[in-house]
Image (cartoon, rainbow, N blue to C red):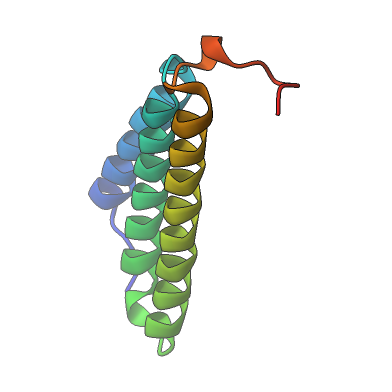
Length: 99
């Protein structure tokens, strides 16, 4: 079953809003991670609705969901590590080359 135009437009709007949040909110690390998760959620919605007519959709959807959960766990562990080492999650408080 293919997606109709309303579903495509709604998922594209969600993806564009997520990308906007990912790009514009770069003051805190948590805001960047939430924007990235928002983009992944929209991609997950597109994949799950688009693959609903295929016989192996459960395998692909579960694989994508596992990868998204691993990405979220890695982002949260990075956030905890940064907060423990620098005291906050501001991007201005640490540099690119600082370990």
